Amino acid sequence: MQNNDDDKLIKIDMGTLQSNVAPNKDSVLCLGIESSCDETSAAIVDSNRNVLSHIIYSQIPEHQKYGGVVPELAARAHILAIDTVINQTLQAAGKTINDIDVIAATAGPGLIGGVLVGWLAATGIAQATKKPLVAVNHLEGHALVPRLSATAANGIGAGASVDFPYLLMLASGGHCQILLVRGVGQYELIGQTIDDSAGEAFDKVSKMLGLGYPGGPIVDKRASSGNPKRFNFPRPLCDKPGCDFSFSGIKTAARIMLDKNTQPIDDAFINDFCASFQAAVVDCIINRLNHAMATDVVRAANPKTLVVAGGVAKNSAIRAAMENLADAHNMIFAAPPMNLCTDNGAMIAWAGIENWRIGNIVREPVAPRPRWPLTEL
Ligand code: KG4
Ligand code: ZN
Image (tube, rainbow, N blue to C red; front, side, top):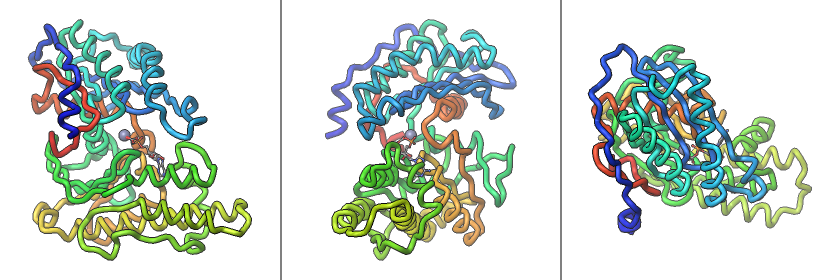
């Protein structure tokens, strides 16, 4: 069904675009562009893992009054911002487009209007300058960014990198998956949500409480001063074998509790509600990761590092619980710094470099894709 939809998309003629010979330099510069949701972002990253410049234009204020991202408004906002964001990124790095070796942009998955804006900008630049172009899968951007930069107490310090293979908890607004990352473009799905993503659950519970959008950071903050035992949220699938998630039951439980509630909804109520909800999400993530670590495929691969990535990786309780889990399994825990968890251009630039290194550049027309599972890479 989805593939048919994808086939209907117009393929963009790459014209005279060339697969350039690899620049013979110590350090390769990549301009990365991200526009798949509500951030217009660009960054220049080098192959030695330095971020030379990074601009993120967030559209959150434009979508806040609707309680979520409005795709049509997002696409228009990307159109208005894209040139400025790219120019500012070049200026901030003190570079011109001639200094750049590789162009990379998100080609999916995401809101297709936004993806098209960034992808067309990148295509135009690559055609005009005859530089190699990489079509980055947005999820691969999240998945690989810990190799650009990661922090954690037990092992990964500043300057260290995350080596393959690693076990990845990828949790964002649109996705929730456990993946075994064997290499660039090599992802094995171990488990995934059968309904909502974790980010969606945070956003919806925040909306029910009238706390605003995006919900994750607000719920996280409220939870930090709340009692996680006051409300009894379910832990869907946690008593079942396997590694899949389900968050819609937690969300429905929140709705029912609020509908039946007779207590005053004051600050203490909201904090306790957020803390109890968040504790349920954390328990589900840890339970499913434990199951993932026990699977034959993960045991055989023996990953040394447990990684969290995606917007939800900003969550303090999830980071702390995953760090403990890694400790218990003698694994290193790694997470991107906060500004590289939510959508950003640096992760796309880095994925551009990683793909360019293995020769994965655009050689024929590419159709941007609203859906593009990592396992199809
Ligand atoms: O990766 P991302 O920026 O966009 C997608 O690719 O979907 O993730 C955005 C999601 C939103 O659902 C947002 O509420 C969630 O990440 N998020 C958080 C936190 N910060 C952002 N969720 C929980 N705790 C946070 N601190
Ligand atoms: Zn994302």
